[in-house]
Length: 277
Picture 1: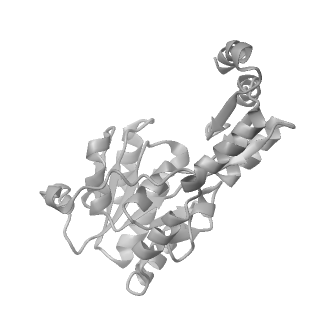
Picture 2 (picture 1 turned 120 degrees about the horizontal axis):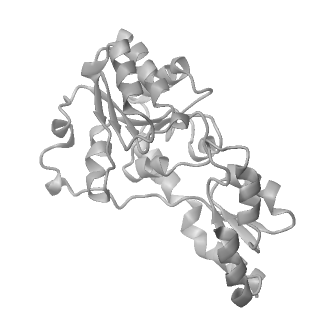
Picture 3 (picture 1 turned 180 degrees about the vertical axis):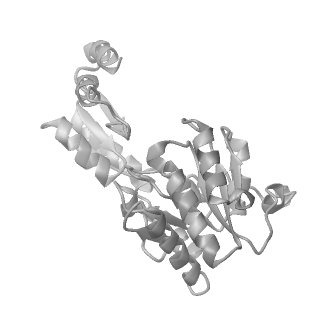
């Protein structure tokens, strides 16, 4: 499709086609995907990537074509005013104020590691019964495998599972209710969920895979764990919990957001403009 569209556009645009790329190769790719990707990018004159990891990936396919880089914007428009927070977010999910609430948000796919987080929660509950997990997002897999794991681990009372697409107007309560957003991914390039968390000034616990680590200031905007295993993720969450009293995560996130390179995206497009002209 992209090859065909690019062919017809190129007749008018005369080698002035910019591709903005995210996941260049699918996280769950098949043997033919790389060949199809090369075909789809045939008519690109230049590329704009949104993380260092994607830049590295696209350079393997770009040849001599220029590659520019920015990053995803911070998604800060979901927040609600205090007056509109009725009922309070935690009340909506049958959570208590003293609960330590973890959030897994977004599409549920194997590479995102929800099963890892469920097993990590079981480990945490043995140390502290006040942990709770809020899962919100549409599952691309059979929901039964996760519900069965929840039953096997005996954590039914500690998990709130919402297998549904969350529209824009329904996003805020999930982030308002949590203490930390957990991204236990097995693979990644960058993540819009991470930038949504920053938009709510919520810290994150992430696995050090793909390009995720480049967007987290260790111990300041979140915790980076070394590998996508239940033990490592549980340790990262405990590390976060130990720092909460002495670290102003929200202030560090505000500082990180102020330096987001998407704020200078106009400069990148001026470079692209000069290239094309």
